[in-house]
Length: 499
Image (cartoon, rainbow, N blue to C red):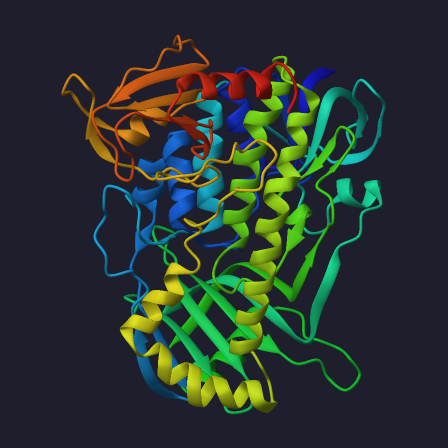
């Protein structure tokens, strides 16, 4: 079998990449080792920037219909309620931030919505097909599947998780740290007798932790998490419903709550690790295959989605004739993002889950009192929304001086009008697979094509009249100038003459 792109792994990362390719008409094959869609919540939150990506992919309405926002967190110290924390930003949607709050929904639901979108584009996941090996040459990759079939592809992308077969075959190591002083048991269970109008987290005086979060539109399922310390012989209990019940009773002090019907049980350690390169020849890594970290801040699923959103349009462009060097910008842009996420999530983990010592003392006597302050909590939420991700040092960003949006930054949404007075929403102009030139108070001289849309706007926040903006297919600003010819020359250099 032949295809342009082989995607190994059909979680949110792989599905986002498949949709990006599918809506551009790029032949691809997405496979998954599991015989059917994976159950379980695993990740359970979509950050504001990911919601903007999902808006562009055409699934934001389904995501919001099946998720919830603003679920408060009731934090207990010992068995006593300490504080109820607001998890919403307390800000209404604004023209520049249409989705200000994290949307809570289980990862399996995100995958189902993305699979439906992929099906609308004519694609599907091939389940029960595991990548067992591959070889690459100058022209492509020959992959062998567990079904015995061979696939010849122009490129291979490993979206196959923390135990990635693709990464291991490349011989790439995951450098960083494993937090091996404790393990975490996680699963989805049905809970009776606990108010589902909030998530709940108990922190014990001995470092014990347990959390339960209701999952929206999931048949009454809750996500359960609890830490356990290895015994003197190094053993850790297997996750079972009986152990879940025992730990809940001990750590919550509640005898009036019943846990039943566990649909998914797992055990893991927190890791903060990443590879040093996202590309080796014609093979790429994305999502957990390239970086794994603690769930503090809810970044994992989001970072993987945005990896694929970055890589997908570049693969399509190169297959359409752009220089191969365009693909080098994928790692140049996304590796610093992963490094920042690993550092911040590790600090969060060490602050919240410290078992002993100064960090435990600071958590109980400084951090917990501080997060009770709404301003502090709002600041913490803003640090995880991923709206400030930017690529100013990317090889495909054209630097600019003076006043206006900075090249490399996300271009915020806005409500404005065309020079003719027609009302428009900026994200509606940008939605799709094309590049965009925006002339602010002026007409651009470039000719519009299927791949390049040109619009003249009466005004745009932060822009002076006579400013021209070149916007990438993923919504980031590639260049800003007062001469539109500067933008068209830069675009030509990216897509035809080399980066």
